[in-house]
Image 1: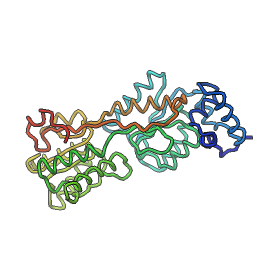
Image 2 (image 1 turned 180 degrees about the vertical axis):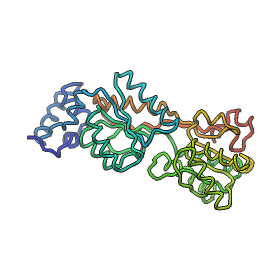
Image 3 (image 1 turned 60 degrees about the horizontal axis):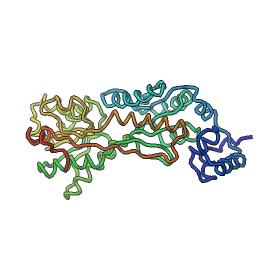
Amino acid sequence: MGKQNTTVHEVAKRTGVSIATVSRVVRGVGQVSPETRQRVQEAIAELGYRPSRFGRALVERRHSALGIVFPGLAGPYYSEVIQGFEAEAVTARQSVLIFGTHLLEQSEDQVLDMASRVDGMAIMGGTLSNECVQTLIDQEVPIVLLARHPMPNVPTVRVENTQSTRDITLHLLTTHGYDPIYFIGNPTGSPDTTDRWEGFVAAHRQVGREPGALIRVGFQQADGVWAISQILEAGELPRAIVCANDEIALGVHAALTARGVRIPEQVALTGWDDIPMARLIAPALSTVCQPTRELGSQTAKLLLARIKGELDEPPDVVLPTEVIIRQSCGCTHEAATNGQRSF
């Protein structure tokens, strides 16, 4: 009789193979050498391993559905990620179940329930605790982490955040000589923003300065408006502002403009994401471009491969990002359009 606490990871560890290889042996598919197959089967017998009810359902692919867990669905960033993810799912004849946690603790039980209704799940950012992710792993639910720091034996897809934020901050510090520079966005619960804040701090330390204030807000336009009201209440505007995303920057832009503060003459401004509106406002927003749709697409591809047991070594895929210089940072139109993008 199978032990309830024996997992596929223990079988893999005992035999010195990947969990994908164990999965192939259990399912009786794929290319596995006779010696390895025998070794895995002996370990399965010794440990009394039995696939969980989740694992059995996933092996049978009876759901034909992928799950994706987001903190929320507001804004162009999430819609682009979903479109990239869904395009791959549709090609593979899979439906997509989307769950927005809104970072509420009780949502973790609902996510665990959702896991029994999909063939695998993509988990974004800080939506779930590491403990909840580990529970899913122990229940043999194929998962891929999206825009999140890696965990052992779990595929991850994310973008480069730290270097590009360091570069755009150094541009403000060295090309333009701005000081102080504030950072608007909340690193808590957001791995992407944590890395961007670290890049912001690293740029200041590189030139021997202390970083300016961190204004902790959410990630929507209204949060950027609120941040400016708080800064003005304190009585002193920074010379430049680095925003954790473009939505915050658009709110900051609107709030400063409404109060007669000139951008970039009085306050320079940068964002992050390069959403379509970033190039349409005046002055156009200097920002960092990330391959948002590809982020979703790569996540779906890895998840489908994970479900099929095709990943021997779970990869950590880091997609490149690019600094985009426009006029909101203080550069002239000619400098911005002549390819001034990295430093």
